[in-house]
Length: 528
Image (cartoon, rainbow, N blue to C red; front, side, top):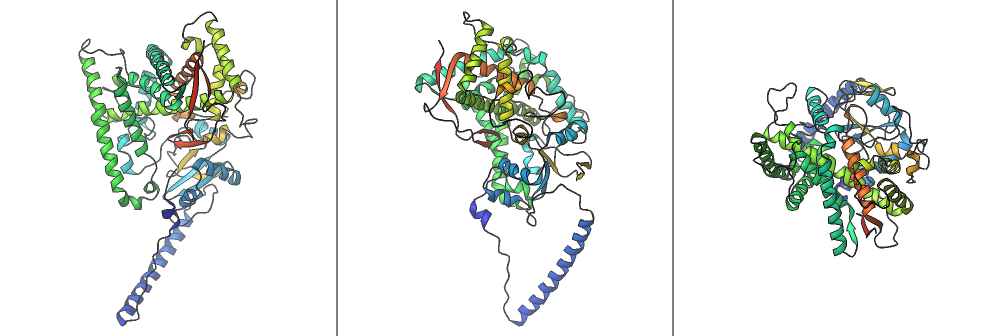
C-alpha cells in the first residue's frame, strides 16, 4: 500500500533539547517548563473533550500517537491485503485501522456488506475526502467512480450506463471487438514466431483491451504506435496516483513538492496528448463525412453537450480529458489482469483448458473452422463457470473502491462517522473458507447449475465488481471481453508453462490491480 525505506520506517525523530547552566539558559528553562505545562494542560482538556465525543468505532489494533497503525502496516513488510487477512482472524468481520489522519473501517463479512451497501445503499454510497493535491487527474472528483454521492454523480453515471454500457449499446461495438481480437491473435502469432513459441500474456491482453476501449471512447481506430503511446501515458498516471505517505499525514506535504510538480507535468502531457483526438471527433460530428471515423457512435459523443445536474455548462476541456481517461483506465487493467490469471489457471489445470476447447468445438462444429464469436460464447455454460471462478479466485482488486457515508450512521452496533473510509475486503470474502468449500482450489464446477456458486438472488458470496449503487458500471463490458478473449485464445492456441514443466507461482502483487508476482510468459502451440 505504501512503500517507505527501512531507514525512514525504523529511525525515530529526535526532539530532545539540551540547555547549559548559564543564568540566561535558566530563564529559557523556566519558560519552556511553563510552556510545556500549559501545552500539557491544553492537551488534557482537549483530550477530555474529545473522549466525551469519541465515536464507538469497531475494534482494531492499538496504534501510535498521530500515525496510528500506519507505520505498523509499513514495517510489517507484508502487502496490505495480507496484513488485513491476519487482522480479520483476530478482530472479526468489522474492524478499524487508524492510518495517520485517515480512519479505515474494514468489512470482511458478506452479511455486513449486504446490510451496508444493499439495505442502506444510499447512506453508504459516497466517496471519502482526499488530499486536494491528488485530485488533479479527477478534475476535482468529476468522474463516475470518484464523485461524491449526489446529482453530479447521478448525471455522470446515468450517461455512461444508459448511453454507452447498456447491453444494446455494447452490441453495436461487436465489430470493433472482432477486429481487435483478430489483431490480438496476430500479435500473439508474430511474437511466438520471433520468440520460439513464447509470449507475454498480460502485455498483449492489455493492449488488445485498450485498442477496443480507445475506439469505443473516441470513435476512431489508431495505429499501434499511437495506441501504445496513449497506453504508456495512462500507466504513468496510475503510477503517479500510487499512495504516498503524505496522503495519510498531510503535515508532510511540503516534502513532496517534487512529486506534485511531476504530477502537474504528467497532467499537462495527458491534456496535450488526448485533447487533439477530442477535437478531431468534434470536427467529424460537426461535418459528417469529413473524417474517416471507425464507428458512428462513441462515448465522447455523449459528453460534448452533457447536462449535469446543478451545473449550467457542459464539461470543460480538462473534464472531457478526465472522463475519457476514466473510461480507458477503468476497463484496461482489470480485464488484462483477469486474462493473465485465467491463462495461468488454464496452464495449471490442463483438463479445464481441454474442456473449454471441447465446448468451443461443440458450439461451432468440429468441421467448421470459423472464429468463435460473441453469439457462440453465449452458448458456453462451462466457459461462463470458468470466468466466474476466475473472478472469485482472483478479483481484480483486493478491496472495492472506498465508500463513505452521507450521514453518520451505525453498522453492527458501531458508529460510522462521515469522515471514515469504509473499505470492503473483496478477496477476503471470495476466499473465505466459511463461505466457500476448499476456496484455494480453482474449481469452475462450483458455478454450474446446483453448485455452491449458484446462489439465491440478493445473497453476496463474491463481489469482484462491487455491489449496490456504486457497483462498477463496466461490469457487463468487462465480462464480455473476458469471455471472448479466453474463448479466442483457447480456440487458436494450446497454452503451457514457460519454461516447460515448471509450476506456476500464483502469488499476487498489487499494481493498481492484483497481478501475478512473476509476470506470466507462456508457450503457445497453434491448434490444428
